Image 1 (cartoon, rainbow, N blue to C red):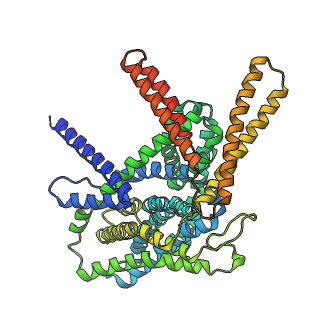
Image 2 (tube, rainbow, N blue to C red; image 1 turned 135 degrees about the horizontal axis):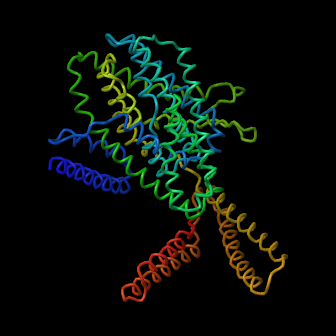
Image 3 (spheres, helix red, strand yellow; image 1 turned 120 degrees about the horizontal axis):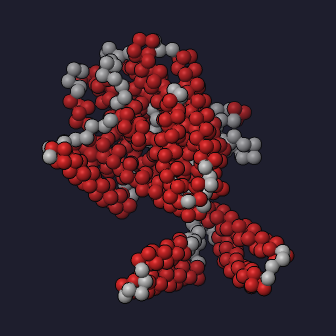
Length: 541
C-alpha cells in the first residue's frame, strides 16, 4: 500500500507539473516573457511552500535530459551556417568558456577565504556555458537576424562539452593531482577529438539504417535512441559524450532531407518538439526547487565570504562576455576570426554591428547544464556548498535578469531579421523546385508512354505551371516592396482564407458521415490526415 500511495503521489506531482508547464506556455505566448524564467520563478515559490521537493539528480540530468535536449537543438541547427561561422563559434564556445573558468578560479584563489585555484576553476567551468533556451525562444519571437540565431545556437551546442571537460580536469586537481594548464588543454583536445569521432561513428551508423527510416515508427525509434547511443559511446571510451551527441545531431539533421521519407520527417519533428517542450519545462521547474536546500547548507560560511564568492562569480559572467566580444571585434582582419567572419573563401568577412554585439552580450543566460555540472561535485570537494550557491545565483541572475529583459533589449536595439529577404529566398527556391519538376516532365514526355500517362503528364504540368506563376507573382510583389516586411497581397490572403474555409467544410462533412455511421473512425482518421497535410501547404511567405 505504501508503494502504491507513493506512486500515486508521484503521478499527482507529474500531472500538476504538466498543468503548470502548459499554463506557463500559454502565459509566455500571450505576454512574450520567456517560459524558462517563469517556470524557474514558479519552482522557487513552490520550494518555499510546505510539501515535498524533488532534489536535482545530476547524473539523471546529464544522462537522460541533456543528450536529448542537445540532440534536438542540433537537429534544428544548420551545419552549413555553423561551418561558415566556425571560428566565431569556437571563440565563444571554447575560448570564452576557458577564459571564464580560469578567471573565476583566479578570483576565488585571490579573494575568497580558504578557496583554491582548482576549486575556483571547477566553479568557473560550471557557470561558463550559457544555456541558449531562453535567449533563442525570445530571439526567434522577436525576429533576431539569422546570423545571430546561428551564433547563439552554435555556442550553446558546443560550450557544454568544453565546460564539462574543464570541470573534470579541475575536479581531478582538487583531489590532489594539482592544476596544470598544459594538462587541462591536452585533456580537452583529446576529449573533444574523441567526442567528434564518436559522433561521426553514430551518425554514419544511422545513415546505414536509412532503409529502416522510411517507416515513420522505425524512424522515430531510431531518432529517440540516437542521442543516448552517442552519449554512451563517448562516455564509454572516456571522451566527450556531449560533443558526440552534438556532432551526431548536426550530421543526421543535415542528412535528413536526403535519407528520410516525408512522413518520417513530419512525425519525428512533432515527437521531438513535444519531448523538448516537456523536458525543458520539468527541468526549469526543478531548478527553482533547489534554492532552499542550497541556502540551508551555507551556515558554516561568513557573510563576507559568501558575498565575495557571489560577486566574483556574477561579475566575471556578466562582464567578461561583452569584453570578450568587443576585443574579438578589434582583432586584425588578417587573423580571419572577427565576429561574424566566415571560414569559407566565398563569404565576405563581416564584423557584427555594435547593436548585434550588445544583443549577443546579453544572450548569456545560464541554465540546467550549470546546475547539473556543479551538483556532480562529490561531498568531499572543499567549498562544495559555497560553489553550488554561487552557481545557483548566477543561474538566477542571468535567467531572470537577462531572460526577462532580452526581448525589450532586442526591440530597443531595433534588431530584426529582414523578412522580405527570407520570403524572397524561399520563393526563389520554390520556383526553382517547380521548374525542376517541369523539366522532369519534359523528359518523361519524350520517353515512351501511353495515352493515359500522357493525360497525367498534362494534368500535372498545368498544376505546376499555376504554382510557378503564383510564386513568380509573389517574387515580383516582394521586389517592388520598399520595407523589410513581407508585402501582403489581398488576392493571396483571400485565396488562403477561401482555402481554409473549404478545408473546414470538408472536415465537418466527414464528421457528419462518421456520426451517421456512413464512415468508420479509421476511415475518418485517414481522410483527416489528408486534409491536415493540405492545410499545411498554405504558404505564408
